[in-house]
Image (cartoon, rainbow, N blue to C red):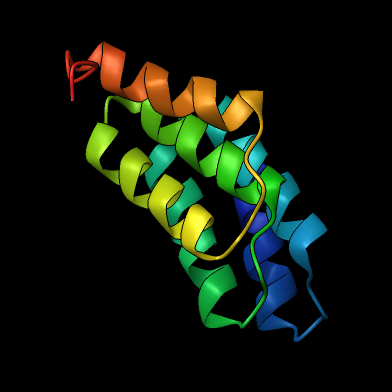
Length: 108
């Protein structure tokens, strides 16, 4: 996770062209390393770089929030994903439901 974050930062600083695949890989690495804040930071950088999120970037970001108990952010990301017309799948639904379940918000 930390190495992926470092490489992504270096890539952005050196003006190497990045894309959704690059960000998806880095966000997933952060998510798998329990680095939810860094995953969301990368997602934010991606958005500010005018790179459109896809199902992979949203799923990894939502899953990072779910694993860390940040259900409000997970729901917000799911809402943004829907508004951006990104097709959800079982992974995003499960991660969003898991975020709510872990915080006892499943009844909402």
